[in-house]
Image 1 (cartoon, rainbow, N blue to C red):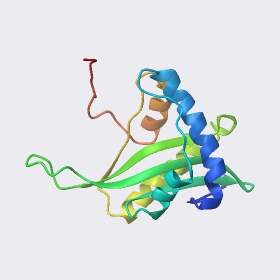
Image 2 (image 1 turned 180 degrees about the vertical axis):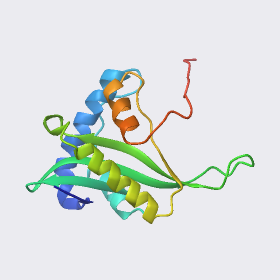
Image 3 (image 1 turned 30 degrees about the vertical axis):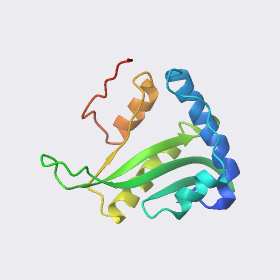
Length: 153
């Protein structure tokens, strides 16, 4: 298995993985999520961006997982340290390939990507209902720092 930057040749495989990822989002929070169309323009904007990339896990010529990462500057607020964050926007490993260490290898590649880009720390979000996801992130060094709360108006 190799981890590499995604290219336009990977779009069809990425669309399938994003659909699978969105199934979880719709299942966990149907009040916020629907299946979206991720076309060439969506991926092109990422591929052309200077602050984001998609890393793919490829085995036997097949894309079996991905991580969409962004390098962000911390908000410029007087009480916040001026730090860079690597934000893990999305991560998915195809259902049939889970529990084979692919997610951990993607996570290691994300950490290295962040270090190379000068990030101070990595951040992501996980649905509270996603117990397996939270366990995965904790095994990979994440810990809860803040809770997001919301209400309907």
